[in-house]
Image (cartoon, rainbow, N blue to C red; front, side, top):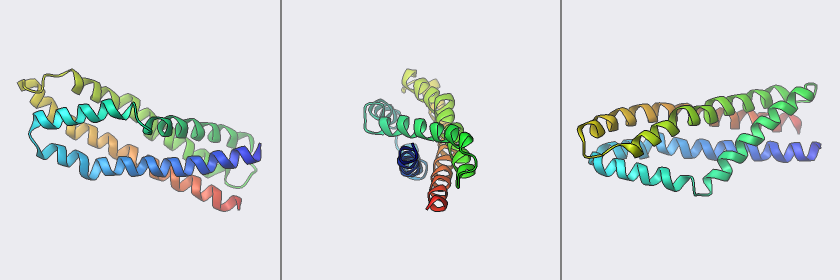
Length: 161
């Protein structure tokens, strides 16, 4: 059981770091680049990325890291006296709330709304400006949560030796 937990901890530390890097790139380059091109082109590009990401290698990372983080957080409650239990619990909770819940509650609904608009309409153009602002804000939260969880899981690995 301990070996499986250590494998899950390594996976979670690396997975959270990779996810955080992906979100970071979107926050600091992709979204601002989409905002500088014609709204119709930006909307089309974002809709294409949203459709592609759910069919990509990102999804096993997204789901697997979430499951590993929650499983580790629960396990840490039963192994509270083990070194690193507190950062494992914190990492799992931060990742689940700040990445998974934020994605499901904010980023995905925004993506669904964007896919449903007419990019040539006045409402579509107005929504695009709101979308860029709101989606990027929530993506910043996902970035910070993912990186924080990666740091916490890595800290747990360090104290476990």
